[in-house]
Image (cartoon, rainbow, N blue to C red; front, top):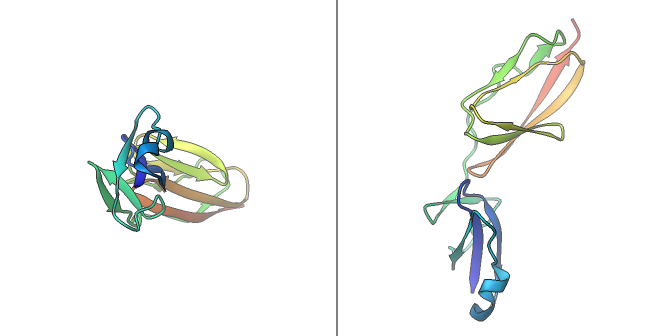
Length: 135
């Protein structure tokens, strides 16, 4: 029997696998906030799908971008990424930031390039390279 376990709040597919039906409760053990789907459609996985109302839905590309990919190193001027899903995770290099209001503002005093990545179960991961330039 094929199964997948998903987060009931975010729809993220947490894990999937195959087992005999009598071993399902052991193999597909669910944590708090998780649910199991028996025999999901072929080809469904955490990299390409999420779950909403027990239906597997294909992820899409996040359509929005920063208003600029460059910002001066004054620590005051901000570039903005808005219309983000609520909540979602943004990573600056490897530092995780939880976004709860749908907007992300970025500024810095440090010259350099920064990798910014959006992670959300409904979208394919999307990345931007931000340049902080010296003024």
